[in-house]
Amino acid sequence: LLQNAARAAARRMCGPGGASAGVRALSTEAAAGGAPPKKPRRWARNILGTLAAFTVGGSGYAMWNRNRLAQIEMAEEESEFAPDGSRKKRLVILGTGWGAVPILKNIDTSKYDVTCVSPRNYFLMTPLLPSVAVGTVETRTVCESIRSLSLGKRIKYVEAEATDIDPKLKLIRCNRNMELHGDLDHRYTQKELKSDPAKSSSSRAISDSTRTRPNFELEYDYLVVAVGAENQTFNTPGVTKHAHFLKEVPDARRIRAAISDAFESAVQPGQTEEERKRLLHFVVVGGGPTGVEFAAELNDLVNEDLRHFHNKLVRSDVRISLIEALPTVLGVYDKTVQEYTMKHFQREKIEVLANTFVKEIRADAAVVQKKGAKDVEEIPCALVVWATGIKTRPIISNLMKTIGESIQSNRRALLTDQYLEVKGAPGVFALGDCATIEMPKMLTSVKELFEEGDVIKDNMLSLVEFQNLVKSKRDQYPQLEFYIDTIENAFAEGDANKDGKLSLEEFTNLLERIDKKIKILPATAQVANQEGIYLAKYLNAIDGNKEDARGSFKPFRYRHMGSLAYIGADEAIIDLTGTRLFNIALGGRNAFFLWRSFYFTECFTARTKLLLFADWIRARLFGRDISRV
Image 1 (cartoon, rainbow, N blue to C red):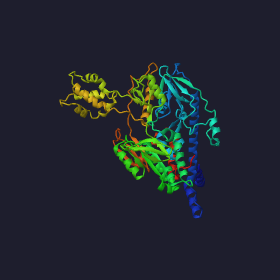
Image 2: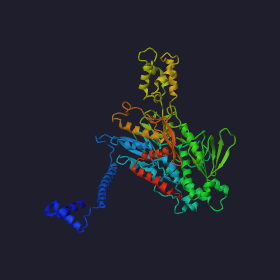
Image 3: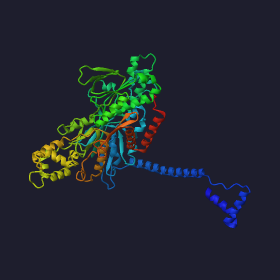
């Protein structure tokens, strides 16, 4: 607009004499001391452009939000019948974790009437819980509502806990579940409130009737069990009562409050030196990724934030001890990474008690015993974080008993086939921490495999026949993946008499060595996420007239993408050994940026990405919030 006005003024100044007259007029004005014409200002154009951008962006957001709300309303009115009039298959999903969420996001709701049942109505970014426990990341950052994640997918969600699965009747039973994930304390009964007046304060936990939920049953055609696992205590006395777990958001909130309590108690007037040292001794049990990352985050909290307010205590009294039963931490990682982490913890003054077993946890101490020692040692401490492993939930144990121990022979988790279907329970699928895949052994079918590979029927296998056999069976037998790039070496290893062929006996001995390469998949978020993506595709591939899609679908194959862990002081480790990307393991500041980049991209929504980035910036600029909230 300003440019057009300037051009019009120039034309008026030129008049009928044309451009030359206008130039002469301007020259005369300039000679007479007149000011030259002003150019249009850039800031005005910038303001107009910004307003236009905001107008277009706001209109786009309004249209998107209106469509989003319309999808929510349509999801509530979704029919259980398909467009052709047939009844949809009923798919019930138990859980809202790393295995269940990819199914909720990718399942075809035009084929299935989907119901999700879980006591936790949000997805939890579990790898960031150590950061939540010290205030680097806030609780809402690592949570995303299940209803938001399944937006537009027309999925029904029920906040309840499944207690029993009947694979014969194809139904699940759910209880009232008065205790839901998210509680910091149980709700007191009226009797408890009367007996203890302190519980009647304005911030008390109360007993009300907001959670009035009846028992109910749900029938299914297909069931997906992704309920995860519980913390493994190994029946160690005192763990359940006195130790903190780190598996849910309430766990992280309790630990954060306990750390604040320990420091506030230590600075109380009249506190003895011995008691102060006990209060400020923090013990972490378990040298896996969770234990290592929490010890690292706690050390950062002490050195980067609390030392400004409790400098004398941090210098003289604070201790962090990590107890591990193995000779080193991060036992499943590459040896280079293990050694780097041990040296880094030594520099950071984090005490690692390797080859040490915990015998008992008390309110004021941890009782331990060194490997090979007869005597036990008592370690005075105030806070114990237990991060040692997992065990099956009661619903999984009951299902295994219902199916039968002859079929479900694995006590650690539900046994599934390579399509993630539970053995002995047709139509029931299991994935994540609550399940393990039964890998078929080649040795059980040695004669059939030998006959199939012996194309020329000379009762011997040549190198070419062995190569073709390995390539044709790699999908059926995952252990062959270890030899797919070194088939010639494996053949030479099995050819005992060096005649260039494998006899049945030599072939049998070679398969026995190959079967030893079978490995149980680790209980990690990476495995559960890949299984969830696979199972959603598998279920979508099932035709309406069939019960499964095995004829057109390959078995599940896990692709290891590497492992990461934060070790404190803006350093991390990354282990890519065994991957198809880079066979390397490294640690340091560069690995720290990779660690943060990975978990930033792993956030499911733009909301959690923005909150996570803001939390990292806030902690860097202003420090962690050390108030007890």
